[in-house]
Image 1 (tube, rainbow, N blue to C red):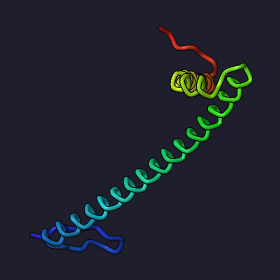
Image 2: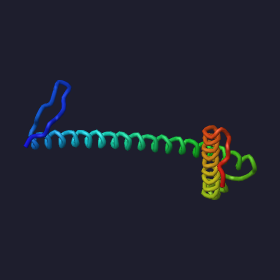
Image 3: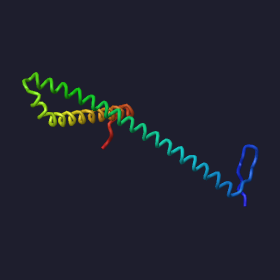
Image 4: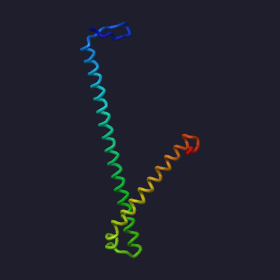
Length: 123
């Protein structure tokens, strides 16, 4: 039994085994491409995570320096700062996370308004 495969210059016949081999080769090539794309996306995500962590650490280091100077200028000691730093750090992280989430929500709302021409959704 032969399968008929249309070509630009006519019709060619191939055996079912050859047809299966070609389909498997095409499937394998597609799977390899998908795997390569997923690996590349994972590498890019890891690079973004590293960059975010580096930026976050730099931001935290700057805040710590400013907070220490502010406490010292207000009459506190380095020992006071060291004792209060875990609480200050937690409060700062919470405030920054909420600020960033709010900014994200505002961007989403602005995009929605642009897409809908300022119309609000009906309940």
